Each structure stands twice: as structure tokens, then as C-alpha cells.
Image 1 (cartoon, protein in one colour):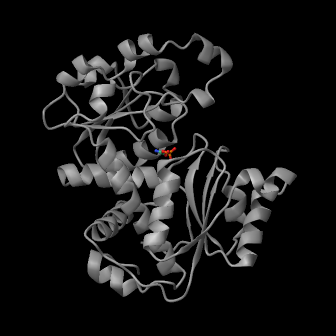
Image 2 (image 1 turned 90 degrees about the vertical axis):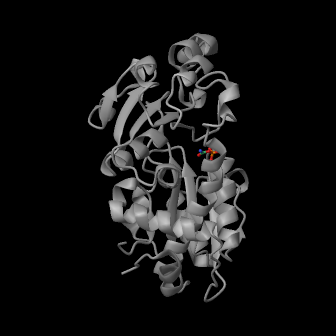
Length: 318
Ligand code: CP
């Protein structure tokens, strides 16, 4: 894979790059351990709430031997008006090697890239823009299940408009040869989705897809009017994966959801733990995929020996 100090968008990845990360994640899942060449430090700056991404990045960093420096936006100098760029310049000056950032603003990372700061950066989600680590862990989960992605039919269903997961996954899935379909409220099917797949009602999709990927309704990004008029029962009946719809899915198909889940809204609660659900496997894979991403960055910084990873995962860092 190309040398890079920043992982901010799936647009950076070729198919070979995706497989590079999948093979690294698989090697870590099989027990690969590594030794840092010197003490190294990570900081996770989450300006939006998170359970999975924040925890699994921290777990990944610790398992790779990084020391994790705490950061709380509520008590940081961001509250005094310090810019993100200045915050990053500051932690870089103090000695942090890697910043993992989640931020509500789309493409918040662009000024950081333009400034060419030597600190490494992984985007843990920007507004409704990109979520590269979620997308890579989703590709890993599908690859583990089917052994390939090309030719699979994948439905992405729910709050498309506000979903950085949908925007990242539609790019990688189509690039890897999967056929993508979209469903959910038609008003949330933005023009940017149309070039990646067809919109169909969920009832037309359930019996023919290999992967049913549900998305949470992001109430925090809806207008007050939309929130006031939203009815969970109506939404579930019209757009959700009900138990009746799930019964029509092929036996070999799987259910995915990036979580957090609104049980009984985009998915019937009983389906979250059903045999076809891979929702908790996605969370487990997330930690290993984040080990893959962080270790990739550590190789670029000269903090990890590339050969150890190359030998264990059959990948190439040149
Ligand atoms: N899937 C995901 O990004 O979850 P969190 O918001 O809990 O990190």
C-alpha cells in the first residue's frame, strides 16, 4: 500500500489496499503480536459521542503497545476557541505520534492535510462524510463470511442521507465488485447515492440480497420538525427489517448494522442476536481492523518493523 501518514477517507484505498488491511486484521485476529521500536503515544480526540469506535481504537492502540493520552473536549482548550489545527500542533509538540479524531464537521481534516503536520491522523468519522475504519471492518466481516466481495448483492437500508457509513461502504463495495442497492425513506436517497446503486423498496430486496445492512436513524442530525413528526412504529413497518421480512431472506444471507442500534426501529430487536446477525462480530472485527490501521501508520513512522507484519500477514509495505 502507498505510504501515508493520514487515513481519512476510503477514496484513498485501492482494492489491493483493502485486502492489505483485511490480511493484517486477520493476522492480528489469529494472535499476531508486535514490538514497538520506541515508546509511542496516541490521543483519541472524540468531539462526537462514540462507544464502539473510541473503545476499539483505544484497545487496538494498547494491544499494539502504544500509550494512550486522555483527551476530553469539554475540558480542553477547544472550549476557549482553540482551533483543531492548533490543538494538533500542540499535541504534536508535546510528543503525540498518532491522533484519532471524530468530529461533527464534514471533512474537518482538510486543513490538517493542507498544513502537512507531521503527526499521524486517522479519521474516526466526520459528520455525514466518511467512516473509513467502519467501512474496512465491514469489508472484513463480509470477506470472512463469503471469502470474496465481488458479485455479492448488498442492500444498505435506512437513514442514508446522514450516514458516513453508507457513503464509505457504497464506494468500497462497488469498487470491490459488489452490487449495491439502497432502501429506506426515498427522501433520504440523495443524488450522490444514485451512481453507486439502485433504490428499491425493502420488500423487493429481502429475498435476493446476500447482505442486509441496516442504518440507524440519526435523530441528532434530523431537523426538529422531522424529529417531532417521526413515528418509530410507522418507520419500522415501512422501512425496517421486521421479523417477517427477515424470514424471507436467503438462509445464507447475513444481517449487518454499524450500531448503535435503535431496536424496533430500523431492525426488530429479536434480529440483533439472531443466527444471521453479524452485528457483534462487526464490533469484534472493528478492534482487529483498527489494529491493522494503526500498525500500518506505525510502520510508516518507523515505529514498527514492516517485515514482521509482511511475514505474518503476507502483505507488502513497499
Ligand atoms: N459504529 C460506530 O461508529 O459506533 P460508535 O458511534 O459507537 O463509535
